[in-house]
Amino acid sequence: MQPDLFWGNIFSLCSALCVAVSMLTQNKKNFMHWQSFNSFFGILADIVLFANTAVIFDTLCCCRNVLSYKNHLTKKLAILFVLTGISVGLYVNNLGWIGYLPICASVGFTICIYLTKNEQQMRYASVYSMTLWLIHGICIRAYAGSVVSCMLIIWTSIQIILNRRNHLCYE
Image (cartoon, rainbow, N blue to C red; front, side):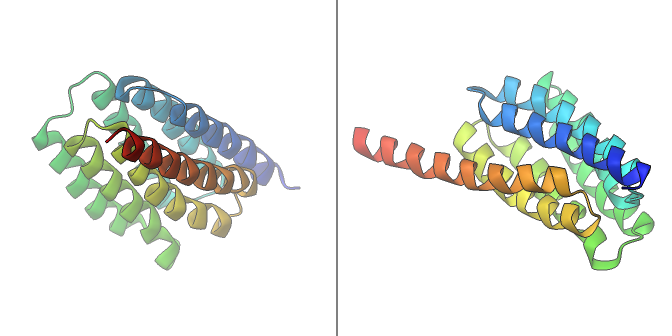
């Protein structure tokens, strides 16, 4: 295995593990704490694997997640992250349609982070975002993180269903 592919997969795996830990949290603050580490390891993986659009988006996501963690993500900043992400993402895209996936994942997740405080809605947004990042990861050969992401998508979807059932039982 080539060194860049090896290290890209190691960083991708670390990123995916941070997502896994974030899914176990019980509040948005802890969720965003682990999502910040997810983005940091994603930046490292994207640099090593030459995914320019993903580097931009993981950098924006890391900043957004830290601001959200500290409760400083305002409406203006959320809009700025969305507009910056779209314009810069389109400009630096070097992977064709594959490069559009981080744009869609990040924009959708940014909107959700700003609009909701509900952990269940954050899980829905996470499944959407992780699915797009999973496809992107497979295409850029970040296989280790993609395997974990696939398991997380399934696991998070099951948690969403179980949580919905529990809420229906109490109503």
